[in-house]
Amino acid sequence: MHLTKMLAHKRVIIRLIRKWEKTWGLLGLSDRVTVNFSKRLRRSWGRSTPRLYRISLHFSLRQTTSKLPVVLCHEVAHIAAYHLYGDRILPHGREWCHLVMQAGFVPQTKLHTPAMAISGKLDPTAKLYEHTCPVCQFRRIAKRPCYSWRCGDCVSAGLEGKMVIRLLSSVISTKEKEPL
Image (cartoon, rainbow, N blue to C red):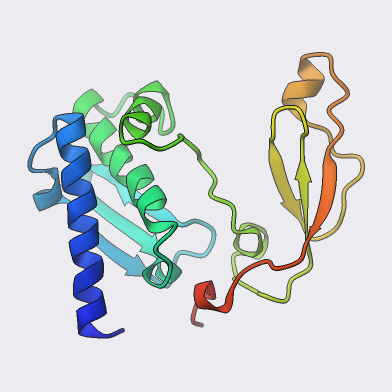
């Protein structure tokens, strides 16, 4: 990657973290957090080590700007929650959710890129099916249609829980494909 593009990413990352540190009342967070892009992440977009103020992001996030703020906020919120509330909170608990919402995002634990969610590899030719609950919008991705799948939350609420299945035609763009 070009040095100028790397510097631009670094500036964007620092600007975002500074915005959130003010929102969360954790001034100086942007000076302590280190962010790197890793080719070793296969099944997730990011990983944080709150105690060490360290974040690793999936290498493909260097090419896509749309997912970067969402994933970065998710990981920075883990660090902020750890330093605000200690280590006895759940990773995606109330405290973490509150921080993500304060930053202006919807708290979510999965950011779907179907091919990565299934195999850990970004394969643009993979034939994948999205299973969505029409009631609560819960989503699952599979390599084949699974007609027996039901939405657990809706079934628990006494509903049928039947999922709507659709073939995902364009799984991932070549810009987002992970270099091997």
